[in-house]
Length: 192
Image 1 (cartoon, rainbow, N blue to C red):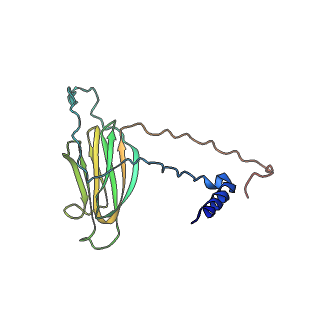
Image 2 (cartoon, one colour):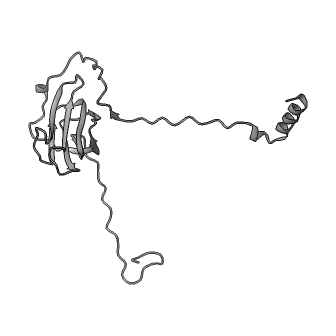
Image 3 (tube, one colour):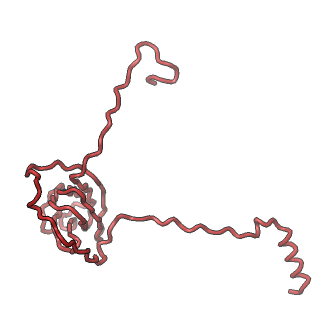
């Protein structure tokens, strides 16, 4: 390129709209936070609590407390483990699950739920097939509070589960009974 051609290109660029020359900055993607837990990672040991209270020092009665559903979910099992981090503030808690097999061969379909504490000790374990019963709906009850790790693994099935805790239930506000008009309805209302 010679100098005259260079000057001609610069002149054309200056005569263009300045908005066309200015490059658009690309926005950074919004970072989402996920509450799931990766069961393949190594758990860090939790901080030790200096003085633990005894479970025998409470004044609660031994009557069974009603548990309310605080979380429900569904997991498709395809050979990889799925994890959930459970932070239970009011125990005891229960995990009720139902296994839905995708194939009819009982040698292929299996599921296993494992609940462990922050020190990686298994607190409870139950499943479907492969050493466990073939009942499709079961409940695991744990009489502790705090942080727990739920690992769900298996193949050729879907697991629907719900976590029930001693937290208060959501209040249901009743809806008023609709008033029915006798005779004619106002315009735009009424049965269609």
